[in-house]
Image (cartoon, rainbow, N blue to C red; front, side):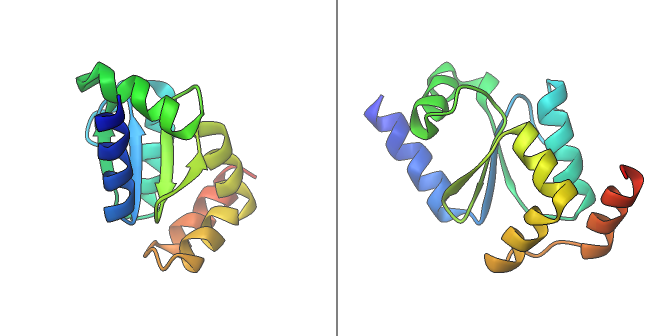
Length: 120
């Protein structure tokens, strides 16, 4: 399990934005993963996706690593941000925009506004 934690730490440290999810960004395998992928893709965020269904050790390892019981899990510059509900709330409040700006993550601000307008 230590090897998995080391692998996860290296992945989240060496990529600006990482999403641990069920499936891939091209083909999410659950509704929660699909929702976060939809937000990130629509906002034009460049991110690394890790399919937890491909490796049971990673699937459990990411939960242990973050001390968070569910997937998807979003990391920005090595820091755990949250799961689907938190990402949804942050998107709607504009906090995700602020987080991306503070961490110099490129995203489409106009698309972000459109998400909020469509869900107002």
